[in-house]
Length: 168
Picture 1 (tube, helix red, strand yellow):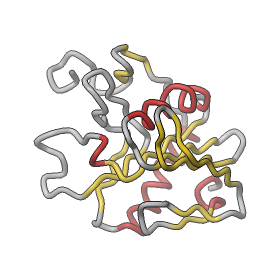
Picture 2 (cartoon, one colour):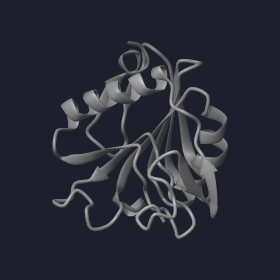
Picture 3 (cartoon, one colour):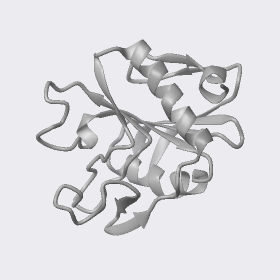
Picture 4 (cartoon, rainbow, N blue to C red):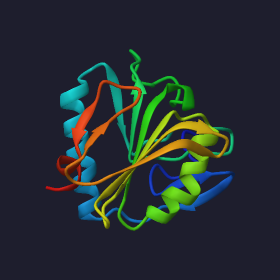
């Protein structure tokens, strides 16, 4: 819908057929997206595409804009079509005021779509929830990480210190 001018480029998501207005992004949220983008680019290089706050097509009725989607590498960088769930290696949602929404609305949507791994970074509690192995509208496994722990992706060669992700 965004490609045809029905939706604005940013500020809304299509979730289960509803157009949802997204919360404005504050400086803390934005800084964490930028920092994590830099860390991921340094570690993963050009083996994947790191997509920042861009659409991922999950169905005809859902096109969320996760904070970060790590995608299969494609030569055209998805110029000919938006990425779909099959292209996603990892979704990362950074939550400052959106934690409840990310957990109650987006998590089931990602699981139903077969997204293999989801991280929700809770800036208020300084915690990272890691979910993997989708099963219906949830994930079979959940891990809660705090500063001092090591964050290891399940489907990528990616390891980060939680303190480095959460703190400036």
